[in-house]
Amino acid sequence: MKLLVTGGAGFIGSAFVRLLLGSADAPRVINLDKLTYAGNLENLEAVAAHTNYRFVHGDICDTALVDALLTEEKPDAIVHFAAESHVDRSIFSPSPAFETNLRGTFTLLEAARAHQAPRFVHVSTDEVYGSLEAPLEADESFPLNPSSPYSASKAGSDLLARSYFTTYKLPVLITRASNNYGAYQFPEKLLPLMISNALEGRPLPVYGDGLQVRDWLYVDDHCRAIRAVVEKGREGEIYNIGGSRSLPNLEVVRKILAGTDASETLIRYVEDRPGHDRRYALSSVKIMRETGWAPLTSFEDGLARTIDWYRQNGAWVERVKSGEYRSYYARNYDNRGSELRRTGSARRVPKP
Ligand code: NAD
Ligand code: TYD
Image (cartoon, rainbow, N blue to C red):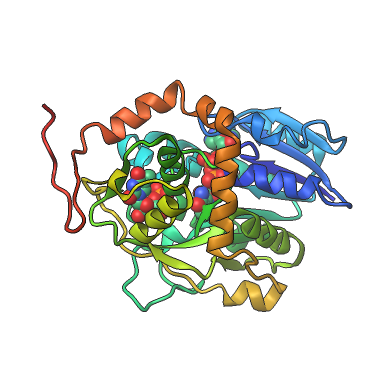
């Protein structure tokens, strides 16, 4: 078995590559990654010397490179993680999300079509369903209703991938996962940002009233689900992958404060994200029934492990929080205003 993984130096992609190469019957893994701000070869140090591993530094939008790679390697499956993955960045600057998530996916699909790739797993997200009123849960037939440039670009690539199955019979499979957390996550997303800030005694910026709900999935559970889809999924099918653990953001933040022995006074309610989705919720019955997969890690265990990892890996955190991260952080948080409040939505506080 030979797999071409895109975006394998990012948070979930690197966990997937480590899972594959850590198994007794490790397949050959080719990792194509552009190494954007979110790509980090340190995430793959444990497997970099594995004889079955090859890293290719490149852009999924590069038609000639992708074509040459498929000609040379003839993978049995393409597992497509590479993306601009952060909602807030896509709000400030939608262009990279458009380029990578739409044009990049199109480039890969075209190459897969030309080379008659045996399997194409497109890694999508529950954000394509948009915000759902309780008690609704999206199953795979739910209409797509994305809100942000990020989720719209993912919905577009998800539909494009689907069209290649419908039109060209390319063996496409789509996964739609909920919010992931775990080791090596770039500290722009809720959990690593709050954990690393709490460990450093810095403020924790909660958007709006903090009562938005997300379903939390431990990254290793997600990677096992994707492996199950690669191995057992049916062509042309979509598989939701959820952690079966819905929590309001504020509850997550309070658990992080408890787990890091930090004070509640670090919480700052800041101006809400524009177009902020209130609630994501999805049903994972289909993947459980068809592949036998189930999430194994409770949120409490996963969070404890994640906090422990960030405690033990201060040097990694320091490196990724330097340079570009600082300007991103200033751009996203400096003009948001903040108030030390316990309830209600934040209003913009003018800078002195
Ligand atoms: P990430 O931002 O941590 O990593 C993205 C990786 O893609 C990086 O290594 C980056 O260098 C690479 N990349 C970006 N543009 C590229 C390009 N043009 N060519 C080649 N490589 C490129 O993202 P993540 O959180 O690991 O997410 C991986 C995938 O899972 C994405 O498709 C995302 O939409 C999806 N997803 C993420 C979550 C989540 O909670 N993080 C949930 C559901 C689905
Ligand atoms: P995020 O990790 O960006 O994932 P997504 O928006 O893709 O679900 O955010 C998770 C939730 O946490 C979302 O409701 C926004 C909120 N949030 C904050 O309140 N403060 C923050 O600094 C960040 C990054 C997110």
